[in-house]
Image 1: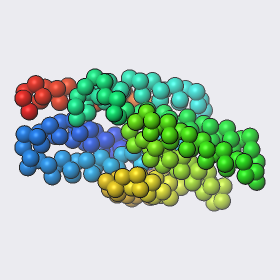
Image 2: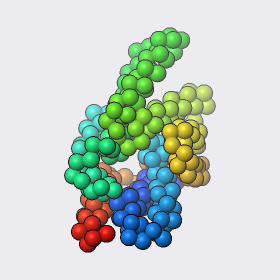
Image 3: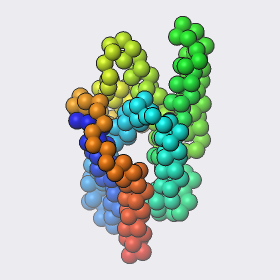
Image 4: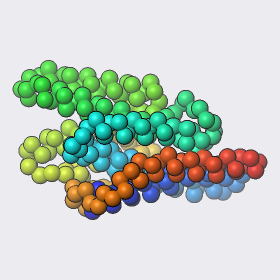
Length: 246
């Protein structure tokens, strides 16, 4: 399984999760018997973020233009915020209690850039190198907590840990794409952050099948636009339901 197929799977389960968050949640208010359906759909959605974290790390390692990568992530975060708010349980244009996952990925990507800078400027035997990396991770984790982006500090720590595991694994084994240990470590971090994230471990078989290849990357901007567009559609549907009195 290449990264394109893995990303499409993550997008699909993410859409299921957001549909539950934006639409099914409102239907449950009118019909409590749908509560179990809502819970199942949210559990399915837990599989998405570890995959996005893995692919973010892979993209960071392989990108030929980090500035373009960071810029694209920042623009995605900006464009997605209002659609995310509309698709949330309250449906407000402004929802300061939580920010979209693109912001989480953007912060994590900035953290990886800082970690890479430290790795490039400090020798491996220098303990200051590891102190600075830990300080950088904590700084960006606190930032995510204060901003209240999706997954908050748990998401940032997860992605940074995935990167460090990848680097250590490749250094020792000379094998690219240690996806399984990255995913297992990431899911462990998320579960410690929130017990409901334990369902993320079901993504492990996909990590085993992941071959580390990019696959066919035609229409790459589709992957960036899918997030805000599908949220906007869900947000509009949720608004129609609310106006219908549910």
